[in-house]
Image (cartoon, rainbow, N blue to C red; front, side, top):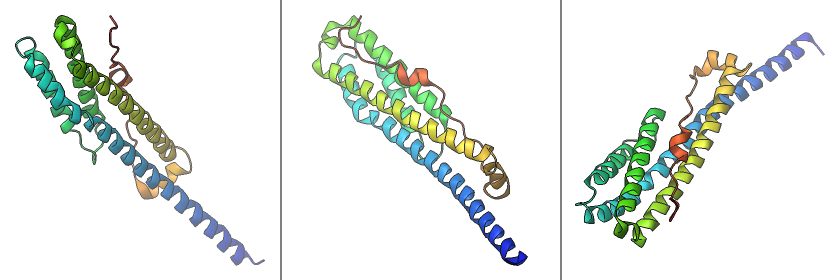
Length: 190
């Protein structure tokens, strides 16, 4: 074989490897965006339950007007989450608002037995807790995708390809596991 043929084969293999790493970085970025969109979709599932919770709390407004405010804050925080822009801080705030609202409802349920015995309220609280489990799972998937992407752009040869072609920046994972995991509904638990 001539030197030219060997050189062309090596160059072709090099180009294929370069394209493969480039595509791997692009795929990783797309996986992060898809996972983030899934997190937002799960967050927005709460918007289906909030009006029903507000209606029940409104019926007991004389008892707990603060809970209604917390539910409104939770709705606003969830509504402001954008699926096209990754903002882990906004997600952290939405999770904190959810935790605050659910804590307020639990306190109200303990203080007012007629609210606690409302079957619909128990079902809604259970539904929110289930949604929080789904959100936690979506966050885990998002964080796994962020880790894979960051590894792809920070390890060689992906780092070289990224610095030459992609120029992608490291992504931040969502690090507030406490907010996602502390909301649980246990009827009758003290």
